[in-house]
Image (cartoon, rainbow, N blue to C red):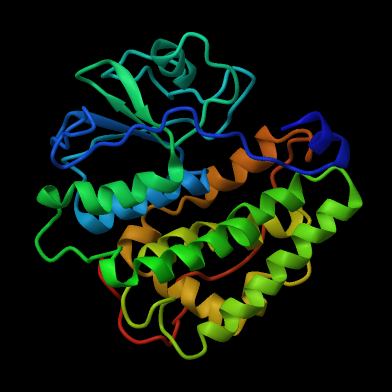
Length: 306
């Protein structure tokens, strides 16, 4: 975040430090191999949630082992509940500094560790899921969905850009704004996009017809956290998710798919945001609500792939 942006009160996300790719043919120096890499995630983090959903949808559980950090993060960063059995790390920061001793900044999830070279390959969250979809195809389960179909990629990328800027990152722009104007800009853009998505989903089960794609994977984690966290904690309180008939039914439809529902941990989500972000919630008190039924019938036909 530049001094000018801090002065204006705008939230600017830290750039990703590790941006290498794992490739099917190994041309990047990191060949896709089952069991070689380790995915580090937090159930609380929406960016990490994406990778968990895709890993489950594609059946990559054995090919890409996962380690989950504790939802409460302090000044030392993300902590493993017990030392990571593969790397021996107690904190994720140890792996960042082992990969780049000069690294400064937040130690973020998701990230992928290479056990062969003993370094982080990537913490580039926008590209981790598409990498799993396109470079790990040899290890996808039989019948796995094509989440990033080549013919739809330009349209998916265009919608993802809008959703990232106004929804996924938009809630953070509102929640971490320290001036009124940038807060209201983010707030207005968020709910304008919610209105567009509500209309789009009136005539389509998913964002691109009757198939789950990368676009649904990217939108869902924000919807799952919206009423529990972003509505109150981030002051995104024009409307709740449950106030949008199509968006709310769509979110429940996705939640009914095991890859989405089984990776949604509301306890981790609420404890992380309300306890960790003391600049917004100084008391650290975690709200008991909201009372919402994610298992209520969604009325959007049979569940999709799991």
